[in-house]
Amino acid sequence: MGALARVALAVQQAERERLDPNPLADYAMWGVAAGMLFGHWVHLFFYHPEELSKSPFQIFRFWDGLSSFGGLLGGIVAAVVFFRIRKLRFNDYADSFALGVAPAWAVARLGCFAVHDHPGRLTDFFLAVQFPNGNRHDLGFYDAIVLFSITGLLYALRDAPKLKGRLLPLLALLYAVSRFCLDFLRATDLSYVDARYFGLTPAQYGSLMLVVYGVWGLLRKQAASASAQKPPTSQGRVETAR
Image 1: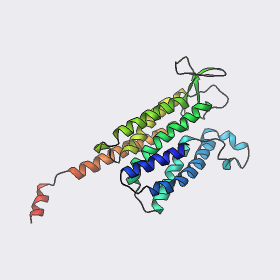
Image 2: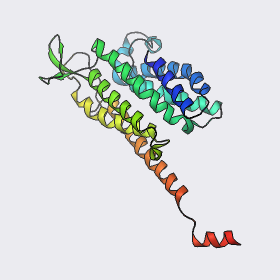
Image 3: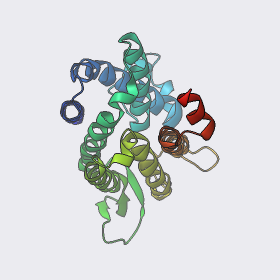
Image 4: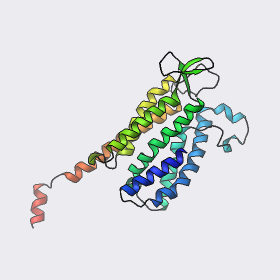
C-alpha cells in the first residue's frame, strides 16, 4: 500500500511540474524489489545478526524482517542505476520523489503501529501504548506522526521558489534529526531489541548520514542559486561591450 501511494504521488507531482511521469512509473518495480532486498539484509546483518544462525537461506527470506533504512538504501541504489541506464537527471525528479516518499513512509509506519513491532521504553507518557508487560512508547506511532507532519510541510512549501529542487534534502534532514532523537526511546529491556553499536542503533548511524546529505544538498543548491544570480563583474561587462 505504501509503495503504491509513493508511486502515485510521485507521478502526480511530476505531471504537475510538467515532467515525463513514465520514468517514475517504470522505476517503481526497481525501487520495490531493491527496497525489500536491502531492507531485509540491513535488518539481518545490522539489527539482528543472531538470525543468521537460523538457516543458510535466511538472507533470501526477504519477507522475514525489514528495515526502513535498508529499504531507503535499496531505493537509492536502484535510483542511481535506473536513472543512469535511462540517461536521465535524477535531480529533475528529486522533488517528486520527496513528495511521494514522505507520505508513503508515513503510511508504512502506521502499519508498524498497527502490529506494535517497534516497542519503546516503559513510560507513563499520555501517548503510551499498552504492551503485555506495561505501557511503552510506540516508535511506529511516533514515526508516523513525524512523517505526516513533514509531509504536510513539504506540500505547503512545494511551490516556494527558494526550495525548488531542495525538498529531498529537506526531507532527509528533518526526518534524520527526529529519528536520531526518537531512537533513544527504543526498548532495551526486552529479549528482541535492536542491536546497538557504541550505544547507537543502526538507524541512528543512518540518520547521521542523512543529516550530512541534507545539509550538503541544501547548501549546494543555495550555492548554485547564488552563483546564477551573481551580477557580472565590471571586467565581464567590458568584455561583453567589445
